[in-house]
Image (cartoon, rainbow over all chains, first blue to last red; front, side, top):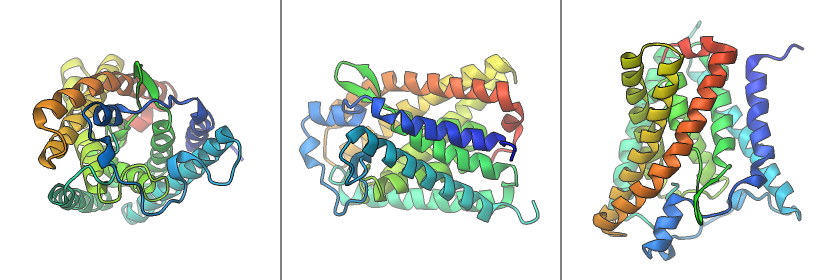
Length: 93
Length: 212
């Protein structure tokens, strides 16, 4: 099977998920402001957890758990946005 | 810039939910009219790419990081309504599966990183391209400027929501949010320009797709 352009696009996205353990763990802009301005404690924890904080549960190695979470999320998003577009596209287009 | 549960008061959370739901409803109608066969795989790749790229926080100054929002890239390639649909999917999955961004704050997050980011970037990009011409330079400069502004204006929207919610006065939240996101926006601009450059070099026809 010949690789189509969008196969390559999906592989690039999965590649990003695989290098995601390299991401900076510093707080992001909003978290930084919330800490500096003293309202970070107002944040409420989630009422349920599936893959909290992009760490796949039950995997001992944190880098591997992050990569797994990234791959799962990337595939979910691909399926969801591809599927939504396929459902919505013009009939006969 | 994902707002967690607890930061917004009920009125702000509800109001942004209503506006975002209206926007998403309209975007579904627009997509129904304009999406063609060729948009479908690009919608899939954009959703996957934006989710994965959002995981890659980059440091912007001592102790603070930022990450791509992606609304600008999606809006420039596919149009602002299609961009809003993609961002909504990303934010729903992040809230429900990854506990990133609150469920009660989802409306505000879709408003900031979907509606605001996609529309600010798309129309600024179009303005730059019409000034500089439909060429490589115009596309890259427009992409950078549109992407930077998408983060900056989304941060201002977020600061207003925090202020209206009584979380932090506007005089404090606005300069703080705008300041740090002016820096994060440079990263957004650079990543957007690099991806646009890559698309132009490999599949320039994708930039010619009808915008939704």
